Length: 199
Image 1 (cartoon, rainbow, N blue to C red):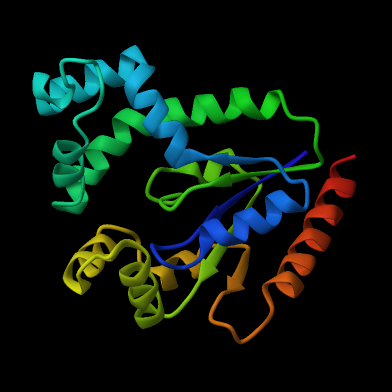
Image 2 (cartoon, rainbow, N blue to C red):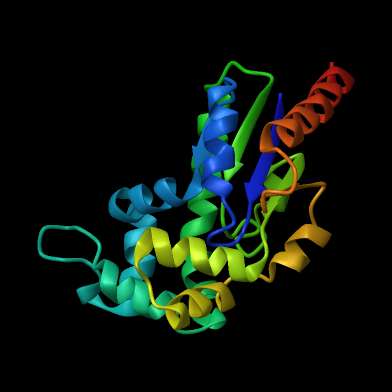
């Protein structure tokens, strides 16, 4: 089995590319959804977040106080690092458990913050979905109704996309210049060769 990570900044189209991969039968682990689930259910994470942000980080019904966590998380890179240090080791362990239950030649780990969260050592191959900054801003504003300043602030909280591309094994260009399906075909050919080499 080849475990590959798929990353990309906000508005890059990473989730759309992963839907195309899932349609090809590739199991996809959504690390964002996994983190949200574990932040509600994992006792180690609950303790870590409570120690960091206080009792108000969880509501009376046990649900996460999302506005409080988001405000802290996106305030600066240091805050994001503190949250990641609490949450992402548990997400890694959850991904490893999930992977062991899959019967497929390739599995994908979806993570917008793959490098920031230290997931490089969890996967065999890294793919970045890339689009120019202005295109990404337009996509997010249309999709989420966010102000441009908010979008830029979220971008600043993530690793620069050019740096992600430099640190990746494969880049999918999602600016309309080359069909995504053709690029995915190329990616799957590489993964297939890697799987054969492992046998």
